[in-house]
Picture 1 (cartoon, rainbow over the protein chains, first blue to last red):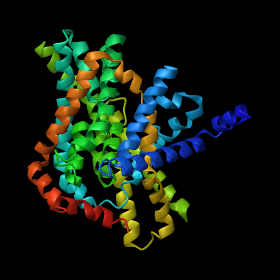
Picture 2 (cartoon, rainbow over the protein chains, first blue to last red):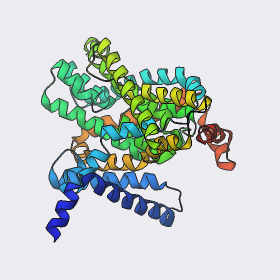
Picture 3 (cartoon, chains in turn red, cyan):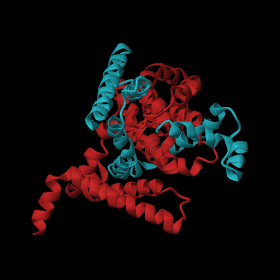
Picture 4 (cartoon, helix red, strand yellow):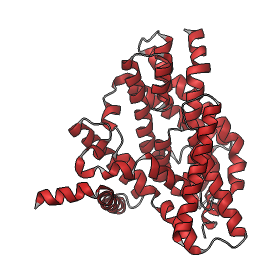
Amino acid sequence: MLQSLYDLVDKYHLVAAFAVIGLTMYLAYWISERFTRGKLHGSAIAIMLGLALAYAGGKITGGADGLADITLFSGLGLMGGGMLRDLAIIATAYGVRFDEVREAGVRGVMALFAGVVVSFVAGGLVAVGFGYTDPVAITTIGAGAVTYIVGPVTGATLGASSEVIALSIAAGLVKSILTMIATPLAARWIGLDNPRSAMIFGGMIGTTSGVAAGLAATDARLVPYGAMTATFYTGLGILLAPTVLFLVVRGLV
Amino acid sequence: MVIYGVALLAGCMMLGLATGDVLGHLLGIEANLGGVGIAMLLLIFATGYLKARGKLPEATVSGIKFWNAMYIPIVVAMAASQNVAAALSGGAVALLAGVLAVVLGLAMVPVFAGKPSRERAERGASSSGASHARAQPARAAHR
């Protein structure tokens, strides 16, 4: 009986995931209402619950996909994977006024370049602080602080050791996950409450999943603006980190 | 029909991703450069064009709105499938690098946004605030 139920959930994993996430959302909004009187968004709590479950899933299975590595919850991987996530992000653009995008466009592009450089420098400085002297290692860890995709791509291009590449991925994951949690908490202080600052935020932080979840937890109306700039961030990082930024690091070290 | 809306969304996505791929190739990087952002702009233009000609009935719109509304649940599923364990086991270098990148990035947002955010936050606290009203048109256009 239990086995057949288990098989059923495994077979219809995406549908099961819809049910699991629906329950999670209900629980999160209940917590938000009951314990924070709506001060902390239900969506912010849902994302934190998701991250906590992902940690538990990763610890139990040792896999890379959080809770989705547990067979019973494998549908979460498809539901929260890149394909449906990007489809939903694009759908949020419906109803956006182009004027607002254009108005913040120049600042958004400036923020993009600044965001890649600032994150890279932050990661690079930490690497130097921990005693790394090899420019390849410093660049790779700096690139990891850009996003967890830029790190390994840069490391592979420059021929970094697998240890350093793993470190760069971990740095990018920390950035992404911290963004999900810290954005709703910091939103007031950084004026993240309008389309313009959302576009700049997307350019400064850039890590797509972090920006997507951080804005969802703050104010879902801001999602399309932040996502629009963030979508260029990883590509720009891959363009700059192994080339210009690496040359600068090699010149300085 | 609802599927028209979903197909429009999907078409914009594929066209945007293809453009992003071409851009990446042209710049010699193994990545999609802004495909999702391009797709978003395509959707804004396509729906704007159709709406102006009265060719965007409610049923079509609901095909887009469904995925729009699924955004937060999808993000929660995404959060639940992140590699949190690896992030926390990366050691002090990874932790500090990630934290510093986020802190500096967030701190730079008001610098680029121009207007001092403190003043805006205070105004936002007392009334709904001018900045809040700025976000409204996006909502209003949803109808």
